Image: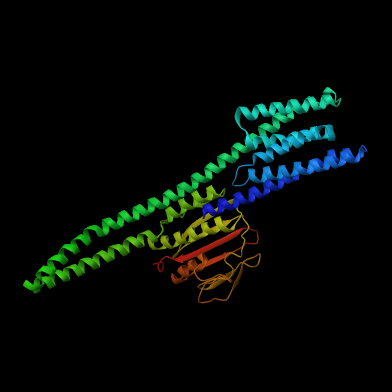
Length: 404
């Protein structure tokens, strides 16, 4: 889930950066407009627009590859630099003032370290010489090397940040994979500890019973009866182990939610209950916390999330709310026990009761549907919806006596 969210966020960021790169091409309109105002010859206009078209195509190719999965093509970067140099005498000072923005960005995609610094220095020198050759005074030149240096530092920083983010994303994916593998190893180890000795005993006693079947049928029957009891105990142990894996702990779910929300940039504040919560009720509230945190991660654009746990006379409750804006109609039409909560409207709306919780338009097995069924079986109440002040709210209340 977190990997999918990270990929979605990276995709949105990449599209935004590409759109910004295309927007920079609007700067080319200034030197072209200056050229047309000067009344040039036809050949000069044709050459200028043809070179600018090649320049723009190279710029788009460089930026598209730079923020994609492949390295920027060297021919495109070289073509951009060559066309930028060829346009210096044609478009004059306006082109000199803006061309370094594109050239420095293109150099950053192909060079690094000393090579990049040297290329930037050469670019600054060429720009200054071009301006001096066109009669620009010192007042119109001195700031150009400074701007080029600032541009180079900014582009290099963005490039380094992109590399770090890519490494971080790879590390997060590796950590998630290692966690899954460790959990599999732990589960396998626990099953081995539970079943290894029992199955070995069953095998040995089965072999003994097979040998005694002809010579001592009564003892063989006793061995088979004992093996049946051993197998039943092993089955019970496996069921308890699986139930232990499937039943979440409230403290672990709160810690997990805090970690995952923090990685997603969402700040979580938890208000614990004043008194201990019974174990059976705590398991059900842990399911609520798990599903609520999942919905916040997957379906909201929240920056803050709050979880309040309370225990009063005969019931325990958890309230989860955030300041985001849910998408996709989360929890529309949830029904639990005595109350239905619809989220299709901006405000929470309650309605008549129903026997089964089912978000409208969602198939069976939906997270909120399953949660609603759990709460309803315990005789509790589940509310979901968008409060009038915005954000999203999930509230579950479970009777202490009936939670098991």
